[in-house]
Amino acid sequence: MKEQLEKIKEEALGQIESSEALERLNEIRVAYLGKKGELTSVLKGMKNVAPEDRPKVGQMVNEVRELIETKLEETRMSLARKAREAQMKAEVIDVTLPARKANAGHRHPNTIALEELERIFVGMGYEVVEGPEIEYDEYNFTKLNIPEGHPAKDEQDTFYINKEIVLRTQTSPVQARTMEKGRLPIRMISPGRVFRSDEVDATHSPSFHQVEGLVIDKNITFADLKGTLAEFARELFGEDTKVKFRPHHFPFTEPSAEMDVSCFKCGGKGCRFCKGTGWIEILGCGMVHPHVFEMCGIDPETYTGFAFGVGLERIALLKYEIDDMRLLYENDIRFLRQF
Ligand code: DAH
Image (cartoon, rainbow, N blue to C red; front, side, top):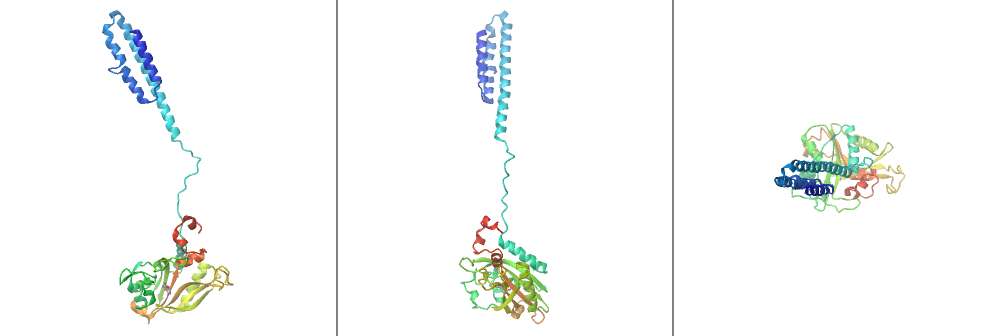
């Protein structure tokens, strides 16, 4: 009996010592101390022990049980501690590492140019108005005095949704929409996307942006147009900027003009930037045509006004000296970050 107990003790302690996982300890507990465990079966064999030896054997069994229990508990604690240490090591955070940067993107040159433009005109008391990109032929052409058969109406130039609906080719239809509302006087700019059936190259894109301008009140003259646009040019390109108006034709203005600004690179002497002329074309403008007034419900005998249209990409390309329009549409963050 004594040897049997000795053997159980040695085996159990040995197994506990070589355990590497907490679950294994439980198995050992069941195998030795459980209902059908080895030590329990020794107790069950007590009936074969001489009555006078029973207390002695009972004491020995208890000693072995205690020993095994103590060893189990010790090992359980040390395994648990090791597991915790390993976990802490695995989860360690190196606070000296540089933080991961949030990738915030960058404002697009078009957006920067537009915000600059809006700042200038809002500063002069203009309102910013928006209009639809999908537009009635009537607003895009007819109400702007652009007749049937005008080359701009050709399918080569205009995207038609159907006979009556187009992707607007200009922001000018917002003029007609604003006039029709009948709230006078008007002082507005209207930025937005426009569409033309053009092949992509360094200066063309089937989709680009314009900013329309419209001023209507009593006694508005060409002098107001000149003064306003000259001030705009000075604010955008610098104090010393000069402007020049060349006669031009737009169906919805009469008279019409194109405005050039003195080259802000060479100051007008002539350089590669202005192709040696000293001037850079910037926008189209003119006095609102009486036909347009009539079609939009405003009396041309009482009111006069001027309008202008600027290509936003053109401004962005000039101001930031970008030589290929396609760069604006690639959205390469390395490109955008430069502005
Ligand atoms: N809509 C014209 C274009 O796309 C630009 C323009 C010229 C707008 C003269 C105007 C204007 O308002 O008065 O070429």
